[in-house]
Image (cartoon, rainbow over all chains, first blue to last red; front, side, top):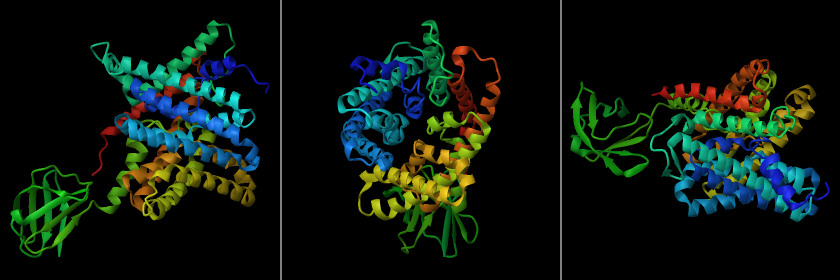
Length: 209
Length: 275
């Protein structure tokens, strides 16, 4: 891979290979914690930090890692950063952490972080790896903000706890089922934008879809 | 010999072959908050050996209580029956709190392998076995090493390490022992590491301070629930693949809508109450 420009790397993570809507990875939290924008934002920032730090670590450490045991080591690197982020969040944002704590811990098992380390950071120098991490992290953050604000607005009529619509338009959106519906609709929207731009539809929105 | 059990929202049945002391001398506490006594308002004799104590606070049949008498120093623990706890844990983790449809865990793998019925079953079986094993190993490590040494902050690293090592070991062993089995289930083994349910089970167990059997029941129940969810989903997706779905909804978007419909129907299980 010749090193693409910074803009290409970041835009790729945001739109063309958006981790949630395009690659269909890291879906669990995307559905689980996006009942309100605030929760989504917190987890989005946490994932962003872990993704960037892990990508950089993998890229820095790659000369010292025997390729045969790289995956367990990558998992340990991710686990290390997740533990750090987990403790920081628990200390500074106890109220939100009480709601999303389990999902912060489960960032370890996010396929997106490991797959970026394996597919990109282990083959590229530090700076492009950092940008790739930032792009993917931002892509996830964007997905969290989009679903979070949509669900909070439709489900409880407010954004960040500030009431915008006095009634609760469609309570279903904040219920478990609503998360699936919202993500499905946004994915369809991404496909529709592609269709409008004259691109051919990929066969189902995901690497393994 | 004194026995007692919770029989109603405000009632405890005491089975004693000696005369019970007056209500004022009885002390009832919840084992989790052992320094907050619950008020016993009355103690009525039912027949020669049975008494019914009435409490002001509501009791829960699933909690552990300690009833002691200040008159003769005797005390008795009120615990829910062992097997009903296990059954309740299994039912609740498999249906009421199904990991896929109400806690949204394991979605990556769920959407990835639920395209065909065959792969859904393969993944379900492999996952259940590995999850119970991992749940057991993590419980042992947590109970005998992390908790006594106060290393709780290492939970994430330790548990994911166990899971990764277990998966790697299982893969190597199956490859050596039975090639046919490996060809069939090997690919699922690799995918298990990225399934958050396998990590959520030991984390939930550690948070709830579960005993060994409860931990195993949670592991079994939740992996069964996961397998069930995948099987149901794969049946529906095989039909949808044949249906004329709008182009922009083809593939994953419609799968999400389907999952939403399943989640709605699983909401119905929330009315299910055991004990």
